[in-house]
Image (cartoon, rainbow, N blue to C red; front, side):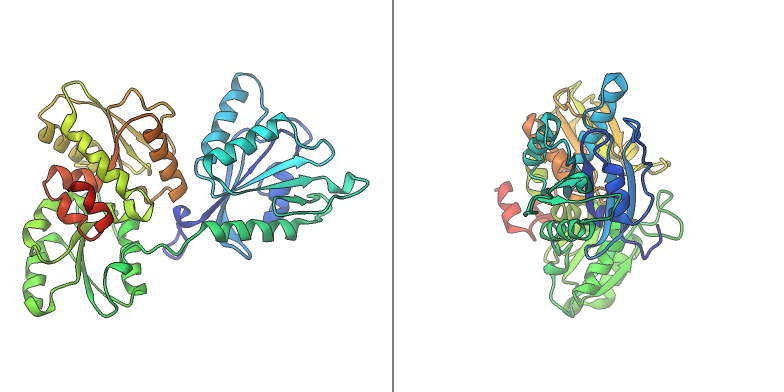
Amino acid sequence: MSLNDTPSAERVHIGFFGRRNAGKSSVVNAVTGQNLAVVSDKLGTTTDPVIKSMELLPLGPVTIVDTPGFDDEGELGELRVKKTREVLGSTDVAVLVVDATAGLGACERQLVDLFKQQGTPYLIAYNKRDLLDQVPADDDHAIHVSATAKEGINTLKEAIAKLGTKGSQDRPLLRDLFQPGQTVMVVIPIDKAAPKGRLILPEQMAIRDILDGDGEAIVVQQNRLAQALEERGEDRRPALVVTDSQVFQEVAQIVPPEVPLTSFSILMARYKGLLKPAVAGAAALDRLDDGARVLISEGCTHHRQCNDIGTVKLPGWLREYTGKDLDLSWTSGREFPEDLTDFDAVVHCGGCMLNAKEMQTRMKRAQAQGVPMTNYGVAIAHMKGILRRTVALFPDVAVLLD
């Protein structure tokens, strides 16, 4: 991905679901105009989710996912069905592909129930309309298509775009926290874990959102922060300081109390719709005892380096703060347990590489199973005693700490 590409987490995720040989892959290829998925009359041709990021007009940047048949059988089939369920957790728009000559069956009804449980907008694409003697009228939920004859495909694309546009919002990361013309100071530590020649995604997003809000972005390392603030003087203090959570305490000691302060991770939690439960979940860190099981989960799969935040710094802060001998576990990427009940708490990264739907799915799973879940920035601010200050920008969240 280049710097000009839309990150996967910011794309509308469109999943194609259905039983084997309903023509899912053929419909995916027709919608995308590419031979994205292998097509065969043999049952179970699609054995793993096929993922493709692309531009889909008239919607824009999307991620298309073709899933294995939901009626797959046997030991391997169960694993494929499990993968399909995982895909649904990150799906913004679901397309249920049905063989029009067979109609809806138990498999399709089960998928519709899952869509409704997840709150996922969905369409039913009745494929093989060219084999019908009479084609029923389309409606808001059902579109009749023929992947081979390329009939009804544009209608399906327009219906997908309509649902995808409804689900997407122009969510601000931070541009609603300052006025046009004001200055936001962005503190970015450059250490061995920082990618050479690049900024991590939340940093890029923050700088871009400042510019979109017609603000002035000043970017410094923490060792230059005090001098940068002094050079501006009291009459030109920034409207906001945003920092990496790893240097929260150091930055908090430098930034005057009257200047709002928060972190990339906390902003990402709000952006993904998780800030309130993450703040509430941080209190669980005060209740951990010896042997308590804590899951540390990251949405990316970057190469671990010395002083890595997830495997070195955060575990150290957790043990120092609690004074307990904790039993820590880690997951990364798409890996996230279905059953969280073995854990006493979950500490998740900001989720910049996961879309909002997947992050919300993970939070809902934790809540449903009664397991407190917070995120890196909130947890670090809590442990450093500055959580109230770092969420003061958000009155509806700060009230949780009263």
